[in-house]
Image 1 (tube, rainbow, N blue to C red):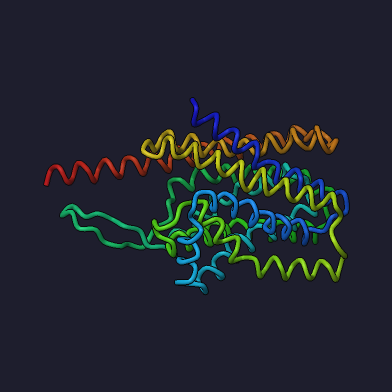
Image 2: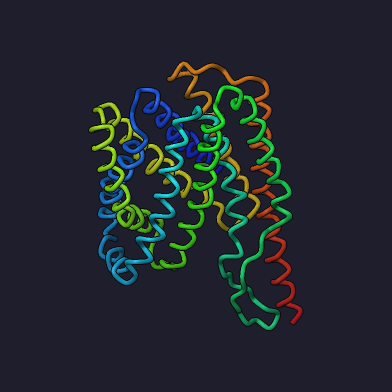
Length: 328
């Protein structure tokens, strides 16, 4: 029960990203500053955490070994993820962005052929094989896509075609960039860095993009307001630190049990509900209609089934390999 509670708490803090971004947009804050300020604060928070763990030297040594890879894939994983996600907040409420964001599960699955994975043969030999798209799991993911379409359907009636296209394209870019950049960086880092070190390294390596965006923001919309600076710091603290630590703690408790791991990952669908509640309480947003609630339910059910089936398949495959080795 403890891993589930920790997973739910992490979803609660992750939801602040969507709520506060929307609040900054409604208060006239530019998405350019909302995006860049978060990562400026992240550098400070993560330097404190990694420094306290005495792991900075190892991180900088690893970054010096492949600086180009760090900059490219960090910019993809963090820059092309969060900048479009923040930009999309200019067009739609936070709960809709949170619900639509769950399509990253589908995007991540479609990226599988771009990566190599270790496969152990019956002989005991380990070979590298190109990943394959998990079509069985994607079958359940269609519920997520259907839910997103249902949620977007009602909101589309009050948005221009241009806004719908810009919002949708931004979310699609973000949903592919996040898993692509993070997986590429995991390949670059191997097992030599922990999650805190890798996150700090990627934040530092993506700074050129955030500096460019902040310069553009300064010349186009002026300096950010004090409230936007404070709110961006809260996003960095709640989502970048608290939510991440809680989620890592939850997954670490059940890392050897695929079914429980799937259950923990499925708790992240609660971000949608927390985002709805937060916008109603803090932003006085109207309660979503029945159609939107149906869409959110489809997204949550689809996410839970996808996680369960993915880890069940992984567990079955592992058991089959173990049996084959024993028979040999």
